[in-house]
Image 1 (cartoon, helix red, strand yellow):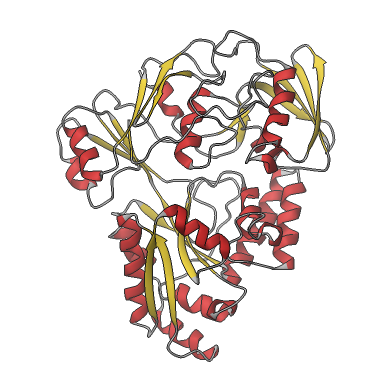
Image 2 (cartoon, helix red, strand yellow):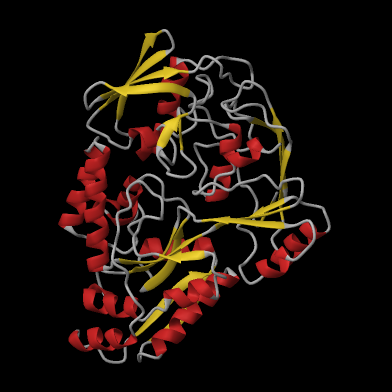
Length: 461
């Protein structure tokens, strides 16, 4: 499998990017995992669970899952894992947990400090062996894990995973090697030459038609549980006015971008939530309407709107940003596109040194993740509310969604969150991009999941 960047580490407590997180889940497994289609949490290392009121969840552990070392998973491992993650960069995921009780007979009770409806999604964090869970970072993949693979080699440019028995999934049929190849053309050529078997989301839509014509190569695509969006600095500058935000949103020709620059492998985002997501409710589309751009700017008393649009140095992302600038120019808006390396870009956004930016949320599984991006308590450095959104009604809804246990009630809450965001447009949902797998004959059975995880590798025959 070819990937565009290095895998920086396989310690799930400290994974800081999508590639590291997804690779680490081949070696590690949590009590729960997300259904690859609906993103509903389902048992994984757990056999089953049941709520005891609002503040306790009783979990039965599987008796057929063992760590790579051969140790059976038990209550001590679950308790130590929660303590270990409490001291990691993902501490907020387990912060509401008050403690873990060993009930015997492979059952544990997870006690909460307060109602926490997203506990089942939080249980996706990998269970670590008790004596390793709160130790120092081990990025080389040597932590004992419950996943279907074990780390056979961790080196710069190459990470190798070997199949193993008694993991959370049946023993895989193949060893898997991740090789880092930064250049897109080099990745395609390696696949053509038979030196690779799989590239997931690593080739631009412009290249895909030519790739699909190569003998022995297949392209498989499915709608993705992700969100590409534009974020505004909303506490000052031109985008403190919702009318200006609506004006810019109306002037973005999203259908054309999806059809051309994204090669038809994206759906226009009329909702925060992607198609098939359990929290998604029907939403009215927002058409491309340059006339409305001019009308909204006139209502706001804004003439000659000028702003900078920050984006990454990725070639496709830069092309999309420049196209947005060109279409807005037809409505009298001047956009300066500023491409930055991703780390520099995120630092700028965190410090508030921007006006507008295009970003991607690569996995939108649990809706409570929106707290990190939209709740006033998550303004940097406390989270990723980079637009500095402060809205009491939105905060109330996000807090309510975190507490409510009933799924239907939560769906209604997040429908109101979605409606509030569409009304105020602190962020502009742009696209839900497809998960695209390009495979050789040997990897032909690989099917990407909606959120882009790699567990389909374990199912290859």
